[in-house]
Length: 228
Length: 156
Image (tube, rainbow over all chains, first blue to last red; front, side):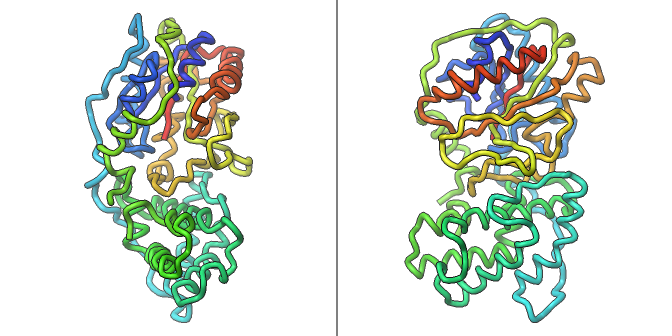
């Protein structure tokens, strides 16, 4: 962002960078920066809070009144990346007892994901697989947990990271459709890994891959650093 | 071990120590009144339209994607597992405040919203010479040709 701000100003545009990394803005002499103590990924602070987002933008635009720079101003409200209310998001009852719970769960949640997609017209699924392929991908993780070698279950080379990315996106996107109340920082990630069958399955598969002595570069990225 | 994205101290330490290119105090373009400004968003959240190729992994992709102002079929191309995508899933505006800009234009706070907005990948080469000398200036040229005066930059 800071490099682009310099390039744009040099071309004759006026810029304001909204950043949670004050030190980077200072070290790079960025022309105008609004320093926001918000978690990464939340430039405007609060999802679904129009008023708060407006306040952030107004503060950013306020920097345009400065007659000289570089100038950095801190937004007066900070948001803690931890400690937000847990996501209140119902999970479906078992529908097909013959399926692994994670596969049953993913299938049962498809309608919720369809509704989310119809409403927002956007999805970040697609790094590796589609929404329709989620149950099949989970079935491969079931096989790893049940003892098969991770590289024997049919994941194409270098695809397992992207597959987990897409499974997590599927759940996080539908969670926003089902959730009651605001979606706080990291709330969907915590809900996915701690409350869903799919998240638990992936953590178990990750541990199984460790036990199989899979290379760390392959299993490590299946959950955020720090998750067991 | 704490999760990087949840650890404010780790993020600030990273910001203070990560290698950054040197920029002297450079250009500072003074804008006219805000209510006469045409505003564009440029984000380094690697947003791209559904079906587009998007961005390559790693730090070698310095191209930018054009996001027409009416487009909402946007995917987040920031794929790191240590990143919270829930906010974007819930509300596009928390990363890309396009609806907020439209409201500000309707209220006369800004003059208008640019026809096109732009997305880069956040992860760039250490020298950033490509976006500094190539795609950055090219993007600026496009915005100037559309009559943009003010750019809001957001990241992830």
